Image (tube, rainbow, N blue to C red):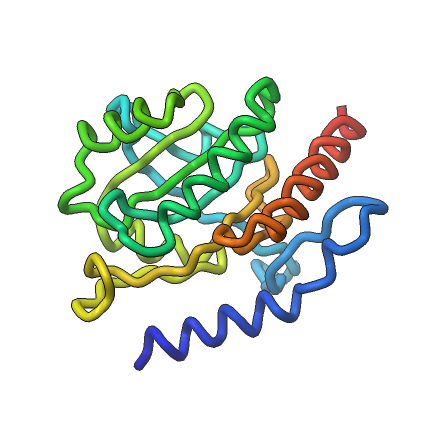
Length: 209
């Protein structure tokens, strides 16, 4: 029940942000509620993290220094939304393959069976490398808890297909660790709008040079 309630909160939060990226004019908004830190209001930001990718390399916030990145949560044996989600992530990968300032980050929520060799084989089957797209694993609690930073949800559910339940959001994060846009990763039209959001963030980064 707790997971369902939290999922509902996430949906309402994202619905509250809906429309903020509808206009193609100006910079993308920073999503999430600001919070007070040492007497100052600061924007929502992705916490520090340490994971390991398909090449056994450590992946941390520093991996994305000076770059934007696109995030999702999946697991290899997922029989429902993950194939659709990965197809749309691959669409983003191919569209921005030559854009060095944009990387992709996919977290496996099945930390028991999605081992580094399996993630390596999965990435190779897609024809992608960790230079552009990191498939990461780590401690289960770390993976599950960081979903909240990306306004997503993942948890074990013995009644769910594959044993896990999770949202299918694709999330855009800027070089400062702020969430700037999201899409329903199972909906090609939503991802089409998301591609435009990435273009807007790239243009914003150009202006900051």
